[in-house]
Amino acid sequence: MTSKEAQLIRTAGAEIIRNSQNEISIESLIPFLNKIKRETSGLELGGAFASNNRFYKFPIQIIEFHKRRKSFWSLKNKCTCNLYLSKSYLGFNPDKEAEGATIQLIHKMKGNWTQDYIMQCLKCFEKYYVSERHYHYMWWHWEPLRFERQIMLSGNAPIDDEFQLLIKAIEQAIKVNNISKDSLIFEKERLINYQAKLADKVDTRDYEFRYGWNIIMDEILKEINQKIKNKG
Ligand SMILES: [Zn+2]
Image (cartoon, rainbow, N blue to C red; front, side, top):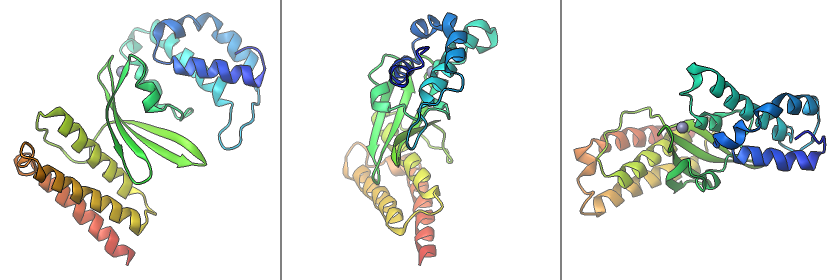
């Protein structure tokens, strides 16, 4: 990190980022924090669409986060998974992160072009909604899993996770201002297909009505139909 050589810094930075959740390895870098900051200050690493400066800026933020956590009692409870929410680094691939011991892939779903995920931190049990994005290059948006609507759960975890991810992904997709008519139709179809899938299986047949999922799906369908109508 202190080499001033772009390739070395990228490699070292990626290694620190890969260990962002590992207290032991990141805390061992705290004594070098000032030196890393000094040696990378003002350094320009280039990069076509995303600045490669993220390979030293974000590692510095990671070390600072762990340092604050170690020194302030009030931050002790702030879990390392908060680092996934950073705006300065968008490269946390959920499939890769799930290979580590601290976060788990709960559910993954193919959407219109991209994947959506529910991830769960195994340290604090916070759940995250992650969506893959493409804009010149692939990146991932992480946010704590929250819903616009209250969803009653069935207690059947795999189905609950699948349903929650579907609703979250569709809510997010149709919120986009310039969404195309084709995309709206895609979202409508995947909702209708899911309704059919629930109805088709003996053990999930009554879920829609028992847990009020039909109300949620009907509301969203109405919203989508209105948006399609507005597109003319
Ligand atoms: Zn956590």
